[in-house]
Amino acid sequence: MKLQHCIACDAVQYPPRELCVACLADTLEVRETDAESGELLAVTLLHHSHDPAFSSRLPICIGLVRLDAGPSAVCFLTDGCAAGTRVRVVSQPDHAGRIVLSASPAADRVAASDTEAS
Image: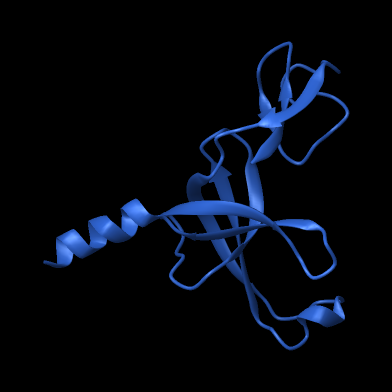
């Protein structure tokens, strides 16, 4: 996943901004980042959307994920995501071509649960 990095202090930030949130430098670059996993901090259901494309999909489960790279991001959630668990995050275009983040339970978390059940 591509995220914005500060050249001055190496902070990673999301969403992109004009200045670094850590040191206020304007020396920022977007580069590939290992940000495909994180911890799901909170979960909520969205029961209303102003976007007609979502009207048939309500309620929509969304959550706040603290990415291992540092920043937190709001993500669409798949089934099986619960606050406090590890998730995998992917970026993909939505129905309008905008990049959105989606999270699903991390494979290593599922594997650990399967092992504990045995």
